[in-house]
Length: 120
Image (cartoon, rainbow, N blue to C red; front, side):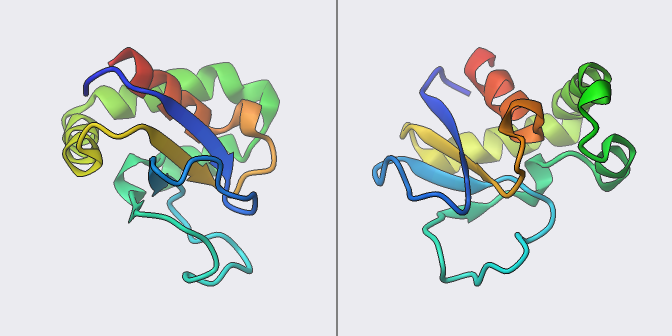
């Protein structure tokens, strides 16, 4: 993936950059949100942490360091690299906005993914 701006937003917030490629990166659809209720260009479930990792982590901030390691491992595996490459093709050079429903952005998979994409 080429270096580009990657931001993270909650799906419930107003979009910051309409020119960016907006990607929902949660494995599950956000609770209480209709699919036509916010602007997104792609739902990339394959970039979200695996169901097993998500359940293990359970948004426990005390486990975040280990979660980050395990999630980066998933992103650097073959299927993760393929998902990142697909996102790169879809975004076509535009800045990215990763969308998530989590309340704690600082301890979210979206933040780890954004860091990974910026460094890739």
